[in-house]
Length: 177
Image (cartoon, rainbow, N blue to C red; front, side):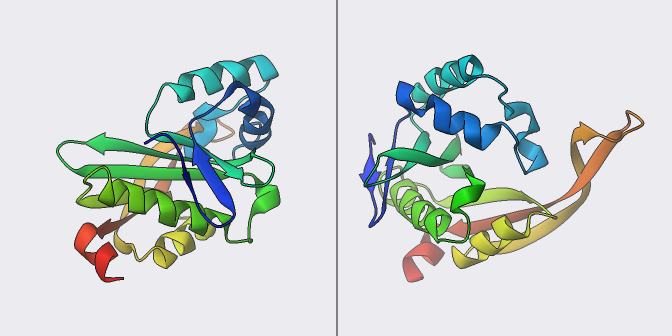
């Protein structure tokens, strides 16, 4: 699973040239679940690109015409056939349908090539854009975990717990849609 294309995008393994674009995406992660992924320097971004390039389930989402990175799509396999997925998109490219286009192709690859039976995503209850994306991807909201996890602290140093939604879609539901 080296690379795949959509009408406007290429999803491919990370390359060294992606460091600048990845730095732009992760210098200010908007979802707190990505707070630990924050990058502050081009050197950190280059090291992160190298790490990501070794993972067969992490992809640079690139504009087809320029091969310029605008986002990240990733998955983690849980044996035997569940995949947890996530995405990050450069804010400059939101609202143009790129996340949906990339995720649709990625889900097709997971279900058809990787043999996924179930694909799911954890989404911060305040991340309305990702919730709407999940719904467009025919994922159902399976639950809401109250004060589920903390990625950042409050001003007083105590953990700030977040409410987290879980969305999922089964292969048979994906095929039917």
